[in-house]
Image 1 (cartoon, rainbow, N blue to C red):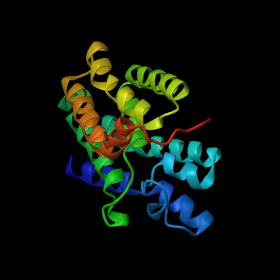
Image 2 (spheres, rainbow, N blue to C red; image 1 turned 90 degrees about the horizontal axis):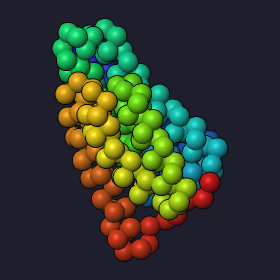
Image 3 (tube, rainbow, N blue to C red; image 1 turned 90 degrees about the vertical axis):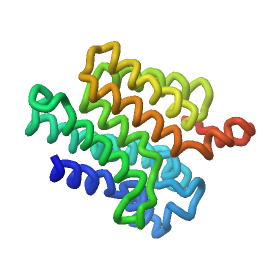
Image 4 (tube, rainbow, N blue to C red; image 1 turned 180 degrees about the vertical axis):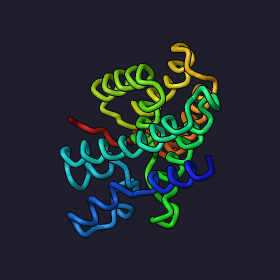
Length: 196
């Protein structure tokens, strides 16, 4: 389990958005916009296409460690604990990357990747909410915060293992915390809107 956690953290730490902007633009994305390495900030620099590419790569980054953990240590063996700990490690890796002196993104896409690996139905609920709220409000941060709170509820309703439900709750709290500046801007009415 310790090995899986370490591997999951290292995979989560791969700074996808940072690498894309650094390689293609020669700029440090941490010094641009929100300072985040996530897809939303990549869009500010690289445009819509690279937003979706970064989103997809971060999603895969979240899925892979959890799928491996579930494959080699089945849920029936440990109640999903290893898969959940791997998912937690991915979130920490993305937001506190060892390759970027423990800076990073806000773990939404990688967190959603872990959710997809754990329970596809809960992922589907998240995706529908996220797309709907983003389209209506134009606020990606608002959509991410609201939609991520559907995870623990959906996991519970779909009968996922208790470890998954607890992870959904912990992940929602952590991702909301990482968005605390966005929450403040939303309350102040000066959060950036995004058009697609």
